Image 1 (tube, rainbow, N blue to C red):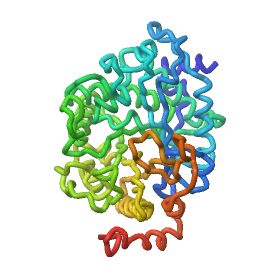
Image 2: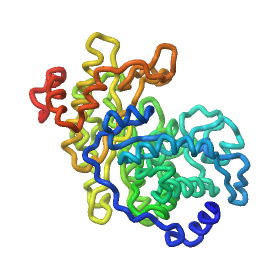
Image 3: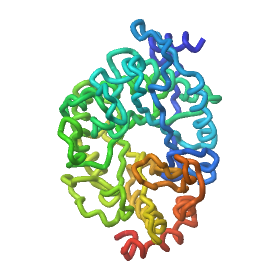
Image 4: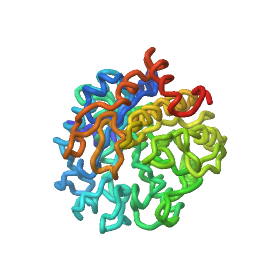
Length: 409
């Protein structure tokens, strides 16, 4: 029956789909987390949750892409439901992060990944294939499943399309290409995804994902591998206008300039004008000001912003945990000054052993494990108090760590 409904939806649009028309919710505040442990996340009082989805893992190789017939991994879908439903049932806004991880299986990657992707797989994430109907089919399935029409599966309100796509060789690989080509190929994938989601939900939001590079780009790579975030954003926006404008939004990652240094207030390479090398928490207003430009507005209003991935290093020093907590306090206070920022989704829930030496979690990972939770850090209690009456005293106690006299500074 579901396959028949999907075919009707594809053929006849929103009428056959029963498009959900609920307005996008307005949670009490921006507190969010990339969730690893659902029960703990709910205990922490989050209102926003990021959930990664591996598009390649969703594909069942019984699919017949040449005829547009796709089969999907039901056990993986059920595991995603088990993450999403308990969160959305408690009113948490769930944002899925749609990622095309290389599987290193040529048959699977040939269907899921962009035809230009590096065949040696020396990259983290691939661009998605738009030359077959895989992307439309998989997003149509997910958008219908989590549109609100099936409460037994849960509800998704936000869809982050790819990851840090301006660094397109590492995080959106389609081979060595120019800015124009990278933005154009991504725009195709974004448009397909947006249209599929719109068939099932009138007000769900979609987001372009960026790293923290703004007028500069990733170091030690060529322009065919990474581009300034500002230039990618502007090129993407121009292509959308030329091909038919729609409501895209921005998912920014304002890590400190040095991911290994939690002192977000001490970034030295950034400025407060539009030519800043990076946009971090210290100058986050640069992004909001840029999106207020007339040519970037949609129906007279600026695009919405979420901060969908950022965390602060725990240095292995006596003051390491206090510096991490102070950085979160600083970032939270800065976020409150920007009305266009809807969510601050912290990364990570638990330290991860395979994250290049970074220890960003609210929890330490257990010794000799990848990301098994072991014990809470100082930041955990502070995070728990964000958005509550207990926040002010907890945050202000960390103000001296930053060297600022007031948070307004």
